[in-house]
Length: 244
Ligand code: UDP
Image (cartoon, rainbow, N blue to C red; front, side, top):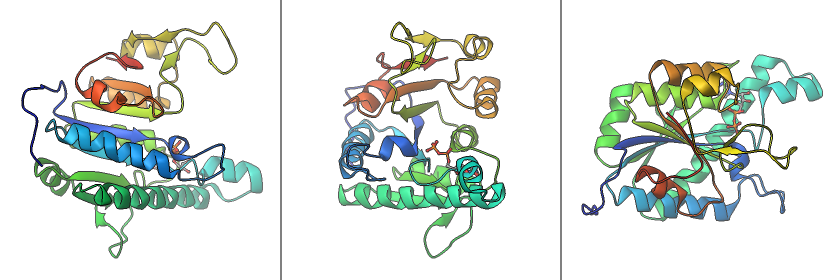
């Protein structure tokens, strides 16, 4: 793909974390919204044209979460988490399909071996794909129960030497209190890792966040509904909340 060299991205290699919820359409009840996939294809094509190397970690909360399954119907936690990790595979394949149809080169790498469907995650192979301009979608989380896909994003970002994590959610950033419950909640434009930790801002779960903090990995939290947000983020323009 030809690159647009007149525009200089701030980040050379990124991990885009897409929560399962961000893929869902609440109005139609569809777990994987076709419009969101299309929008992602447009966004990723746009940042690939800037030469940015893109890895994606997909969540699975739109289909199944281990903890919720355990609470709701007594599913064994480990079994539920395995179901949750398989949900991320479904989302990842849906995204792969849409990105390929948009003309992007894509590889899906899984933390749980399933060689008919996806490549196993091997760090050196992943970075090789990325340097060749392929979009790599990491699925099945970390491959371990009692973890989240945020942790998988933090882990993979460190493993592949990403410059930042872009966390796409339903909310447009990090607030001082829950914006769904409090009308006067204020969104942070920028916050340090240390402040986010002491104020318990809930950018990610604690384990995932401490992995980012220890390695000084910037995190940008933004809403999937915000068109052009991914491009703005990689260009260093202010969107959502920057944790750095
Ligand atoms: N999960 C897991 N290990 C991992 C990643 C995910 O067991 O390394 C399971 C866990 O049950 C989780 C579910 O997969 O609830 C879906 O992931 P997550 O909740 O992180 O998805 P998101 O909130 O991003 O949609």
